[in-house]
Image (tube, rainbow, N blue to C red):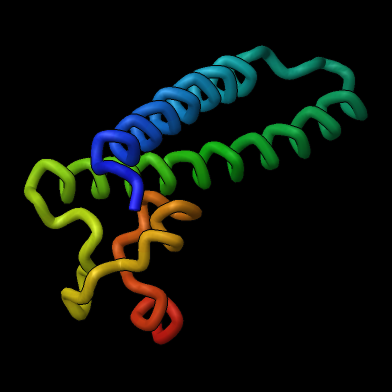
Length: 107
C-alpha cells in the first residue's frame, strides 16, 4: 500500500487540478452570449456540457474533501459502511473511495 502521505498528495494535486478546471468553466460560462440566434443555440449547447462537467467536478471535489477529512481523522482506508480495510489496489485507482469493493458493489 502506498504511504498515506503519497495518497494525500495525490488527492491534494487532484483537488488543485479540479479547482483550476472549475474556474476555467466558470469563466467560459460567464462570457456574453452571441446575438446571432444560430450561434447562440450552439453556445447554449456547449454551456450545458460545461455545466455538466462543472457539476461532475464539484461532486469529485466533495469526495476528495471527504477523503482528506478521513485522513485527518485517522479513518482513511477503512470502509465507511462495514469498517473493513479498503483494498490498496482499489485506493490506487480511486484514492477517494469511501467504501470497500463489496459495499460499493451493493450500493
